[in-house]
Length: 408
Image 1: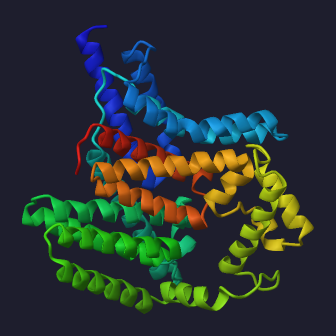
Image 2: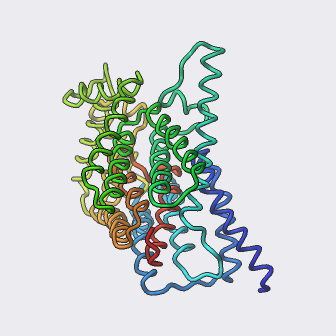
Image 3: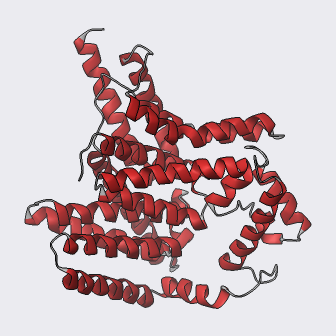
């Protein structure tokens, strides 16, 4: 293959991946075509051949093990149509490690470059959402500046978008704290952090609000501790906590979400007065009971939702059934589908990344994983393209960087 052809394939591969990052916050379904372009350009450039260095092969095997478990779960699923749909949904958990960890003549984008395109997509989405909400407010006298009311017209789930904004803020703050930047660039980063923080508080997803607070505090403490300034770090962390909690309390909807958490946590679910808190509690209980019936290998890749719906129906859980809710916890969702085997694969997937990030001192990767894990406690993050593609892309990019011993 000529050098010129490889050069064009490299550009196609490189910018397709960056466009995946850009389009994720806009709408994850737009990413499929560019993932396909990246895959086919990679196959063409490498002539459908690939090999792995030993160390990268070991990590890649761990990263794709969860996907292989889902593929295995197809064999004992009753609902084969849904099983294959679930396997195709998660295909990027296999594709990205293959593309990024195997030996290739093509150049990978740095995770920082992908994050910049991701931030650009987040900025576009934020402006579109705010502009649409302002239009509705001024012309229809209706406020939709919060939660799913704001994101509905772009068909984006608030939990996923909020998780994206947390990661964007992690990247932007890390750039300010750890890189020498011009004053203008620092100001731009601070403005973006303020915008994305506002969006997180307006969307008012409780887990992501907590994740943002944790990420900011850890980043600031890490920065000051690296300079042996413990008390300055504690003071800065306290200031950040006070500011975030104060703004959350000032905004009506975020304050209502915080108050609801306190009021509803010890209440039982009721069909007459369901809340997101009581629904999650009863769903988690239902999923845990189903897991105990088939703890080793689970019910199968395609039968999770069918079994949950049957349990909702049997227990007279009206709203979880009508809303067709999943387990709203990735650890429970995976355990229900694949049993102990799937749960172990999921823990290994996260654990491998955490180990790599700590060994390479890759703070952004560590906080990316921490944010995703926290989000997975209250949402089934691998059940939609929004979660799978986001995790697959950035996890594989940053894990590969850690193996290349390029601490950030």
